[in-house]
Image 1: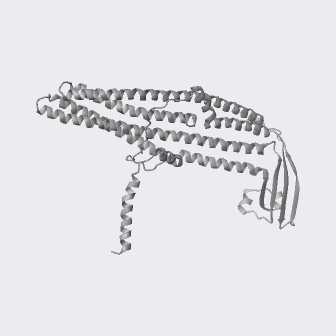
Image 2 (image 1 turned 180 degrees about the horizontal axis):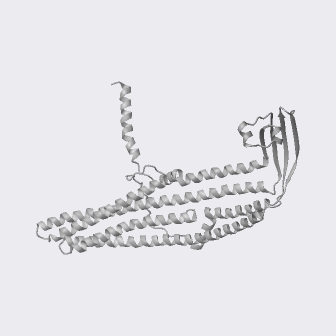
Image 3 (image 1 turned 90 degrees about the horizontal axis):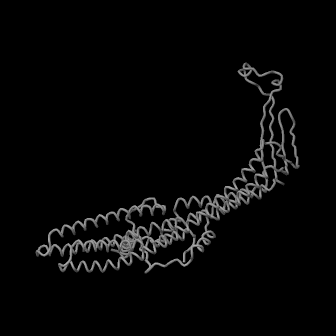
Amino acid sequence: MKKGSIIFVVVLMVLSCSLPCLAGAPLALQAAIQKALKSNPSVQAYEKRLALAGLNIKIAKTAHWGELTGGATLDKSEDALIATPMTPRRMREGIQFDDTRWGFKLMYKLPIYLGGKIPLSIDISRLNEISTRLALKRLRAIIRHNVTELYDAILALDGEETAVKETLKALRSVLKHTEFSIAQGKTPPVDKYKINYSIQRWQAEADKITNQREALKIALQTLMGVQAVETDISLKPIQLPDRVYPLVEGVKTLYTRALQARSDLAALENRVKITNKGVGLARAERLPAIFAVGAMQTYDGNDISGTEEWNVGLRLELPLFDAGRRRTQVEAAKVKVLEERLHVFELRQKIVKEVGDAVKRVKTAEALTKSFLSRVNLGKEVDRVETLKYEKGAGDIDDMLRAKADLAYSNSQFVASMYQWLTARSYLNLVLEEEVK
């Protein structure tokens, strides 16, 4: 075999070995968040809306430059039709036209005074862009938390599964010891059936955890915008802290921080500014408008000589009668301002409630974590004592199985409470839209 062929085969072997490894690489939390922020359909829709808001600003600015319009006409006429009425018979016989006229017209219309419509429209377009940008920021914060919550929930199930598997391993070890004791006549046969029942029960719990985890993985991939979801993806474990860290700030401080940082609140406050500008636009509709107008038009035909007209001047337009429509529009715009202000007040109250709920979730998770940690330490000692007593023939199998079940439950709930605490902190970050100390 030639040297070049050998190198080619070696490269193919390396690639064939590396590709499965890359495909099966665990998904890290930050990678999942970045994927969701990039590929989530809702984020993509808001990014398009933000681009549209930028185009609307450009459109509003073009009104300063006025408008140039053009047109063309082609007419055919017959002088006899003026004196002779049209009849069905003449229509059937056909109409003969003997005169043809044509022409075209150009007109440029430049706004001089519109009651402030143009600057108000530009301001509204800019405020709409800011509101869209703030809404996109809030959406990204929500998606970041949702990904974190699903990721933590999957890892929590992994921790629970580990605890269940350790329990199954211990029970199978006890089963072997019990079968040996039964063969020696030291242990009643019924103990074997009790252990087998306990193994089946814990195996059912393991299957339940597997099904729940698959559903959460599908939800996580859907949030990431993945088209072909898989249930066998693996997640990179998170290094759990050695203990929970209590909140440093008080609730009142967190209220203030949330009200200052929330982008959705800023977007609603921006909506109040937009509706105020809308009142100005409605009022401008009731004011006169002044335009500078220049026009050029030509006429020609087989019965007239070519003519050309030029004119330049000012045009004043006055709204004289509209059955109260413009006045009502002003009142409607004022009502819209009041509505948006009420929405701002409503959201501020909601944020205050969210901060209280978030703090409650964090503190509840802190208490649960400490409680289950104490329970794990106690359960280890109880399990050690009950197993030793049973192996020595001085204990009851029901007590030993109960001790192992309690220890497995405490271990799984301790892991779950740690992830619950991380998720609660993530939710508080979402409420504040900033990192919690």
